[in-house]
Image 1: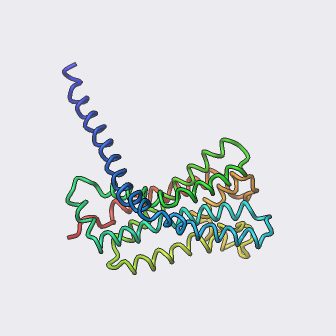
Image 2: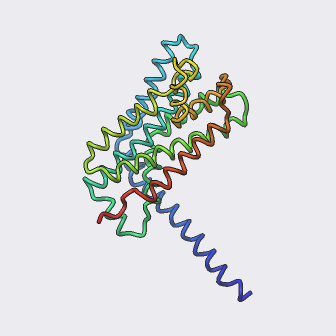
Image 3: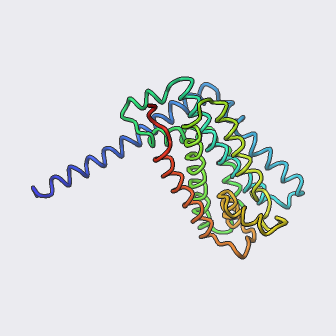
Length: 263
């Protein structure tokens, strides 16, 4: 029993530190998300404007026949927008309010702050994400596909949050971050086959480029969930592997290259 005591102490310390990190992330999310929504509840409506407007346009142009593509594209645009906007918020809090300096001087780690900030932005999009996810589940073929939907949402939201954090940590001005994240939003959520099938790309080389973009695979997963025929040279495991690979890669990049402590 005496020999097991050090291990038990270490386990307790690790467990307590994990619980503390979760509490810190929730507090950051509450400060930057819920408090703002309580003061300005209309901000939820503004954040839902872009994905639903694009969904409406695609639905109308397709005469209602492209509803699965419109729903998949709308959900991806929302996730990309809420994830990348973390960069603009992070830069704003860091440069204008020096909020990062306060957290750097506290026991809060960069990962905990990132998680809390990402959670706060998810709160803004929760109503629109709930509606879009409900539409996907309504068109879904099996209950098992709901797990694929949740995995896709978490991986894409986490990936875009990491990208936004990496971008903002090295930008000197908030305007630079807003311009770059807007450009990235177009590159990953508008140009790739998110609202349209990948098969209609005119050149085979463009298909290879599209498959290198994670949002293409996210859209294909959602199309699969809703019963749409996906390309024969693509599989659901390929899509999940690409999303997970990008998530891990940018997580390591954020840990190694993102600036947390200003020198």
